Length: 162
Ligand SMILES: Cc1cc2nc3c(=O)[nH]c(=O)nc-3n(C[C@H](O)[C@H](O)[C@H](O)COP(=O)(O)OP(=O)(O)OC[C@H]3O[C@@H](n4cnc5c(N)ncnc54)[C@H](O)[C@@H]3O)c2cc1C
Image (tube, rainbow, N blue to C red; front, side, top):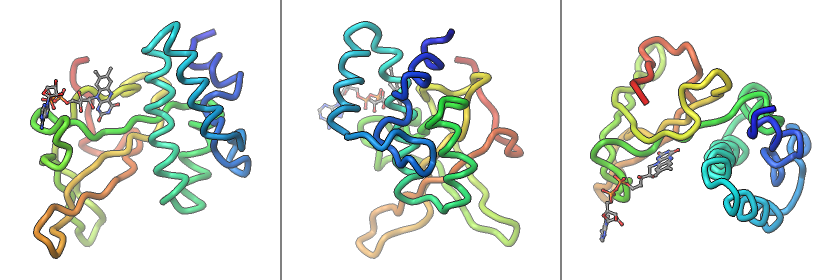
């Protein structure tokens, strides 16, 4: 069994998330201990579960009920694994410097840009990719940054070489 699937079977992928969506309803302290212990053996596995958790947190806190059913449940129970697309060729530590932009049109949102170093992306179990993009300016002149759930099969959404 793949390590990710095994982690899911032990309830690690959904540990601190709501039971209503297939999570374990556990504590964040418990989840932190699990990640520490996984990282002691294999940082890549811990990082994979952590990246999945970042997506789970965004959808838990800001998603609609329908988005939670469609995108959250499968990444909590381990059928899929989520990706968080923040880093870009020119925006790493300085996340505010990202250049991907999203514009709303009559037919929905158009997102333009590219990301790098995205854990869990481009695999046969990759689920939702949550992508950060600039959607406007705040009153103080700083960029307004929003997150978009980018499902597999979105027209124009492609993976580069890893
Ligand atoms: C294993 C792994 C998994 C990752 N997974 C993801 C993912 O799932 N999603 C995602 O979006 N990104 C992911 N990343 C990317 C990661 O978030 C970036 O690598 C990180 O933000 C640093 O950006 P950078 O590599 O461009 O380095 P830079 O930001 O260019 O930094 C280079 C060096 O300069 C230093 N530095 C930067 N700014 C300052 C400053 N102001 N003052 C002093 N020193 C500074 C840094 O400490 C570092 O040593 C992953 C990276 C790794 C290694």
